[in-house]
Amino acid sequence: MGAPKLSIAVPSKGRLKDQAAELFARAGLPLRMVGHERGYRGALSGLDGVEIVFLSAAEIVHQLKGGRVHLGVTGEDLVRETLPDVNAAVAFLAPLGFGRADVVVAVPDCWIDVARMEELDDVAAQFARQHGRPLRVATKYMNLTRRFFAAAGVAGYRIVESVGATEGTPAAGTAELIVDITTTGTTLRANHLKVLQDGLILRSQAHLLASRAAAWSLEATKLRDIIVERLLTQTASRS
Image (tube, rainbow, N blue to C red):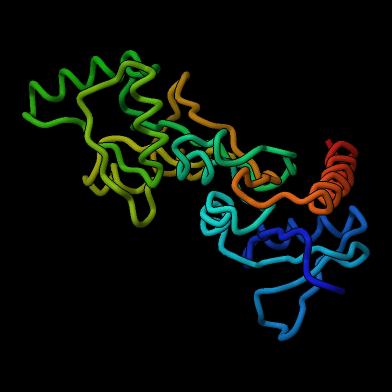
């Protein structure tokens, strides 16, 4: 095979890697390693001119933004958290049906009078009067949190960046509430937290994304269209 005409960044480890590999295989385009088995380059069996680059899910977002890969498979939550003007940087080509997680606002379930964001704003004002400081919101999603809270008209809070298990911060006394991802809600309930009724920030899943900054030749565009059609056929058959 000659020089690759299209580059695709795929997660290098974990369930996202396994699920991406399974989807490509079902689409008749199995991922295969090129060179050393522990390397970070690969190809698509059955489709020449494509290079696979194995990267962390977060790094894929930066590579797409910089135009250093044409396509990438990663979670929508990471994309929208990392890129301030997401639609100018990438195009969402296909939802892939795996890596599902909701980004939500969750508060202690003992806050019986707090069920919605507008009530959270009232609590924030009351908390500041009583304690002389704003509510602390623990999260890894600082940008999503700021945008969502601003849209809901909630002020009087301070973000505490979470580096560990976010759901444990209210019990540990390092935050009053959290913004985090959840799939079933089991972990939140185990930590005596509840999701606000209108506290769904994003219903995320893995997507195939295209970089708007990459150099798109006619050959790369044709390869992209083949891949998108095959992946969409597979996701539609399993929906």
